[in-house]
Image (spheres, rainbow, N blue to C red):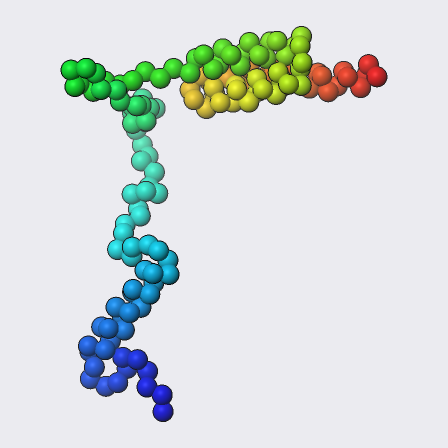
Length: 139
């Protein structure tokens, strides 16, 4: 008859050692610590206004005297660059400049410059679509 590990009558110590063995085996195989809490990492902060959420994600700059101030990060230059490229796409290299301005406009939109990003995406995609529609007509 085979003896099961930790299962003979009256052996509490063997049951504890079996649980400890299984726990160590699980830790070794998964490479994780088994007594960690993951709820904080996947929880959505929820609620709050847009200003509160933007304050949470704003980088903080430390000044010379040691006080912390909110660093103003502006990506307006990215929006204007995308807008200029989208306008240039109407006249020069529409396939290259139109797609580049649409991608840069998407980045500007995601980084907070909503109106500049939207306009550069729209104008760049119109230039790109016009190129693919008009080029077959010339050939």
